[in-house]
Length: 139
Figure 1 (cartoon, rainbow, N blue to C red):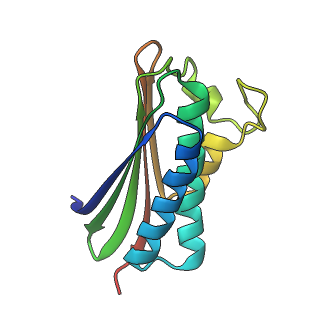
Figure 2 (figure 1 turned 180 degrees about the vertical axis):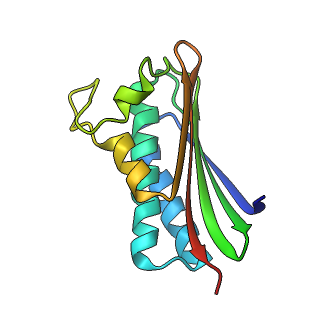
């Protein structure tokens, strides 16, 4: 069971909110004591998830950044939620190269690779919720 320490929520409804979410994730990771490369992984993942909220939904969504502790580790949990169109085929969306908007198709699979834990639930016509976590030993 993880214990929540800090929680920050970023509303993503405009394109510049993508940069805001990335910056907040980077700052939170640095302030939590994450190493530079781990901070980069978290910030890049948040940027990709925020990008998806802006470009794949009509109303955007939220990115919640949560600092948590579990069994001698400290982590950052990223929760991306929207009430958008949903993902019809999650398994396919997790394949490298699959795209619905002409991009490279590496976004969601990339987030899953960069983070230690990755969960996605999506219902067509209801929305999508993604939870990703990055852990490091406490100092």
